[in-house]
Length: 368
Image (tube, rainbow, N blue to C red; front, top):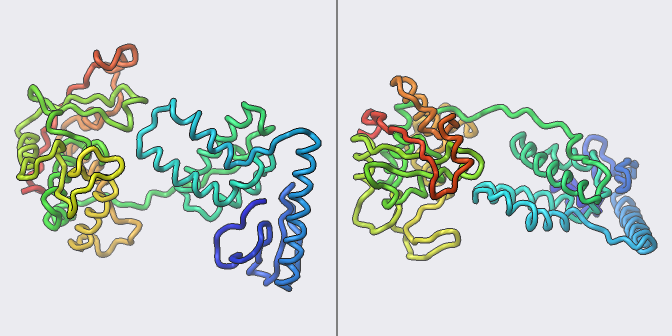
């Protein structure tokens, strides 16, 4: 049976029974085809009827499976197969896998117990409806791929997720202003100031900045393998020339804390956490929270709504804007594809062709 959506109106109701707040009545959704039936205003009677119907539908499905010699495969069961067999060969970045994990949890909570071949378009549409446009589209994309693989294995006759309509996503976050980021930087601890400076001058993503190590700086270059594109794009292999501007930032990263990472901090307790190979490593979530704290303390965007507030990620957009304003090529340093790099597809990683770029943006106006 399909669990009810998690909202106050349906709290305490059995699966497939819903409260219609507009009419003040209860209604039952038949799990076999998604058809609705009005159950009136009596809560107790509606719950009793729903319990009996759910038991009947479950018993009927079990008897059919027994007669046909079939084993029911729930959506949750197939998601397990999807995670174990289908995702690993794609070699997705950890951040992407974490996102999949969040969406899998939501999908399992709403539809996991339902036999995968009994899931209808309407069920999926009702699951996606209350989600934000971004979350809804992410979940829809995952479900579409899941049902594509399920259909290829003969578990479902078609792909109901593909028939749902994606939502229109309106970009809400605004970009940083020069003065705004300058004020945020003043309120940030030293390690976060270094992260801001590196983001500005290299235009790299949050995860790639946090993965940069001192050993990656050699022979006058900072070598960066972009985690988001190294498996999917030939432009993810960057050889960034250590210009005087970048050298100044790298110098500020060296302090009394011994760490292999350019961006590091001394935590309150020395404890190696999951996903970390060194106790001084800063993880993405901590960086995001620390940046938000510094931004809120700076109070630089007071007139903006919460959803409009730019985070650490938006520093990359400001960096590319400043490169363009200075008449420099920001696209290449960002790791965008170039014709010269297509040879990487035909080479072993040991012989990879690195895309040489210069990080020569003057960030003195912000970094001082």
